[in-house]
Amino acid sequence: MLFHKTKTIIIVGASRFGVGLAGRLSGRSTRIVMIDLSEESFRKLPGEFVGDQVLGDGTDAELLKQAGISQAQVFVAAMGDDNENLLAAQIASRIFHVPEVFLRLNDKSKEKLIQGYNMKPICPFVLSADEFDRLTEKVYEEVSAL
Image 1: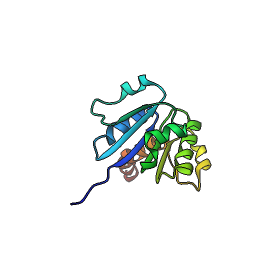
Image 2: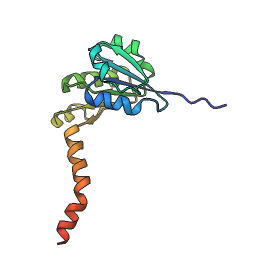
Image 3: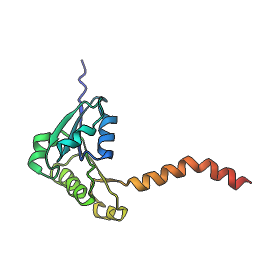
Image 4: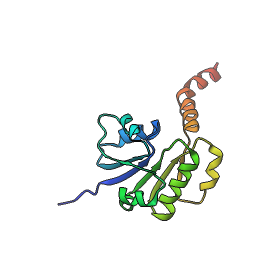
């Protein structure tokens, strides 16, 4: 009999991005741990969310231990502040050696701060612009052909 190991994903920050991600990943043979400073923020989680809710500071190493970071395969820093996300991601990557670390950055220029480390930036503005280009690519081709 084969045993399927459940992937643990820790998401710090119940921002729109963090909550949306938690909702999408919930129930996919994953254990989702959502961490936020505000209990009120957990109310934004979708009804189908199946996971743990931890009240506290996602940059607190002791809290992260209690939340199970030593078993985490993926860590996402999704707070509203770039500097907090940078700190949380560094803790996950450099102290706890989480294999996959992602962080939301509003300021793309801060990407240089994580170069050479096991951290991947998620820049919503860049992703939105890239998606717009993808969606309108055919329109550009049609206009160019005229």
